[in-house]
Length: 349
Image (cartoon, rainbow, N blue to C red; front, side, top):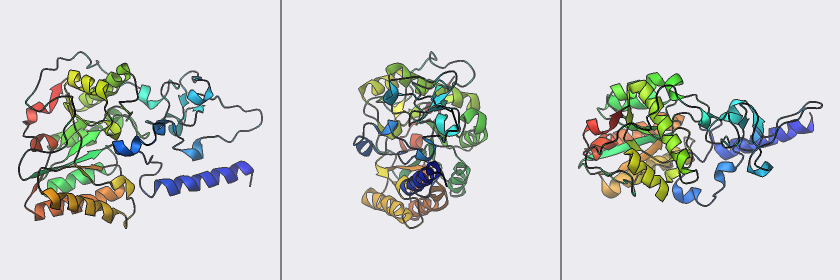
């Protein structure tokens, strides 16, 4: 076995240990609470896919380097700049949010949905729920709990929807336009998003490519929101007025832009922590988190989970719904829990 193969195998083992048994190749930073992410301000530049960071080279082959660690060099043509600073065109080079999109023109973050831009669409104030500002952490409607899901759609999303519908409940899905190498939602996941909308779930925005809105430029924040609007508009003919910032990170500039664009900034007061508990044994911790949150204050809760994880779909979701309805509570969308009429959840674009 060549030394490079030994190194690759070792790194792959470390990667598997660090990322648990959830979605294959899933960066553990997804869904990371603001206080945890703040402990490492360079988390976006870490090598989240170490098994792919340094390609094995044949004779006389060279790999172009890129990014801040390599003199701010940019990749040529339509190449992507991986989190480790290598130019290339594979999915692991290009997938968001890890691809260094300022240095790789081909990064998924730099792709744009088809159709007219929504940037200049009129955005009158709809309803009484505040736009921008410090955001919403809890519900208002008595007897209700809003269970929300981030980072999808993915292969488990339809199963989650069906579980809600079977019990007469509805969920809110904060969808990301092009993350994890899954393809743009208006090309690869249009059927799932259309079903969300048709079946009464709330479709909300989690940005285009899951970038930290407090760590990018003002124009890039607009870009993250408008591109996702365009993709969602391409599916359901309208776009959301509710959004959740990736990593729960939205500084003053971000808050001002969300107010200008007419977005309710959506946080949560009940964290299932499902992304940190991706084994059957550990998932009990997420169930306990939910139960404790409901037992502490019963209704008005605003809970977060992630529909990209199999155990969230197959174990946690059913538990949450059974526990809610067993206590006489209802699982509703965030809009309903805020007593906001459905016509205020979207704009035509």
